[in-house]
Length: 250
Length: 263
Image (tube, rainbow over all chains, first blue to last red; front, side):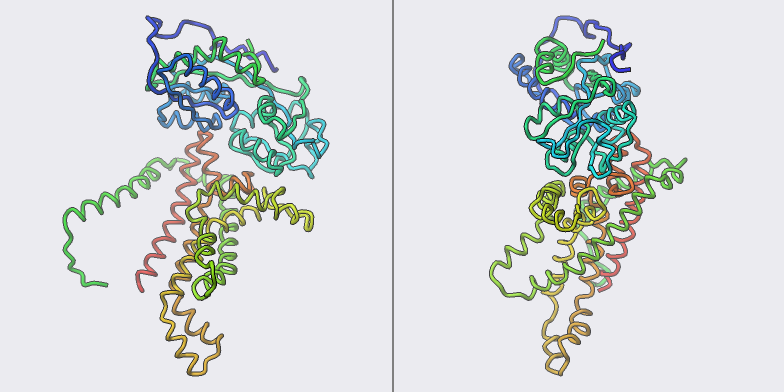
């Protein structure tokens, strides 16, 4: 079921106001999934270099929290979600002014302590009740991903905590509080030698697509559309690829 | 207190009124925003009931811990004469002003599985605190006990110690002096400290989610359940659960005010 999610909403059309592209200035507020932290910080730097008049501010959190903040009227310009489900919360309330575009994708990986002291080799090892396993809460994309992965593998895992975003899982494993956690491939890569990863085989893994859209009533629509183009363009895609993100499934 | 007919400056009245409204409006928001149509099904849901039970058990346990350990600490700070007392007071009441999430991280680094206390504790007893109800109690005690210590300490400092001297000079034993003189004199601050500590423990969020994690039925107290549901767009549930907490806390705070106001 993995890569087939050819989202019906990803037609590449010219941005809404395709008049003479104005030079973006001022401040831009981007709400982005926690798993995008490193990627968007880097993309933000490059975006600022390309558009010196813009200051970019990021609000990273679990996609479900961000979606709630936007539906409660938070002044965001851009929303980048780790799953179409949370983007749908926003589009359902007619709060996106552009059609969401899938800009990247990610897969799950088992994060374990550095050196893998518990000798975890597969998902079925996580069913061992002596191990402390942490996942995201099922409402958050990384939690939905974990649920699907366990289902694919046919294992029953009882997590000791359901974190509110993927950063919580990474922290618990890094500190050694948890023996293992289900995170994104990119999290294992970003965390370097502080933790280690155990690959989930393709037939058990699951892919989550990341949509991006401009938020309705964005305080800075010019910069918002420039940023979205930048993420979809070669510089943005290059950064995402270098950090282990997958190309958007099409 | 003073005789009833106090004249207030109109400006004072206006500013006081605005201050009061500032606190009252959010409560009105909660009440009008509540899902009254199906509130019973929301507040009797498994998540809600489990969270409320956990909240009550954990907050009462940490209040008991505050009484047991906090009272001697308050006594020492109020009556002791030793170098570094000010520093000790500062350190033990620091959690009152520390962001609770900082407390949670600090707790992990000390009492977590790899912490310098938690690691020997685990190898000696097999006990690990994070992700357990005991962990919730630890987090709540860390944040709430200082309120007890500081309230009781100030009660001990402000009481008239000559009454103790008088009792002793009349032949009362130390124990009798404590039970019959000291305790009744500091009773109001003891009660206020207990209630404040309990209320603070009941509302604890940041240290709990950081140190004890979030698992329904194990460590998910009311504030955690509320946070998770509001961040998952289950706003109805979040508002209904919030109302319960507001109601409980309000009853306690009004009761407390009446009691200490009666002094």
